[in-house]
Image (tube, rainbow, N blue to C red; front, top):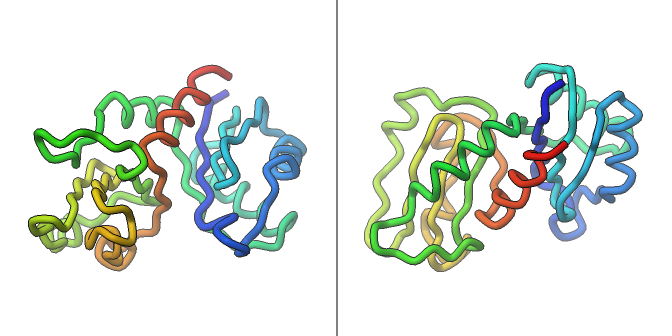
Length: 182
């Protein structure tokens, strides 16, 4: 049994793709997953499963489509992988900069970007924010918020050639805590 973190992309943003977390927990439990918990209303799920990453992502995707009528990207990490992200710290934070956890995002990608795609991403200019890619995790420092910082508006899916879903540093830490104890 693996403690897994499941991140749903783009749910409960405004009026789009509404999913209540209680029914989502119930639906995932009915599909055989154990100790299902959620954090906030933005699609952060922690559960116990016997499925591997690809099978779990496919199962959750099917569950959300069948039960709630939404087609959403699903990103999966193990609890240990999320703990490693937290332990590694905010790697895109410029030296000497104080961390504002709600302005530091980690975008969890569905796959490791091709090296050529990663190498082609431009360097952020002064005042543009900062980014760093660590395996399948894209770290973004957005000092003026997602909308106000140029790096926040970059089309990362296109630049890297893979989809992902972002969480701020506060949420990353809280979900990692939830994943640490079944």
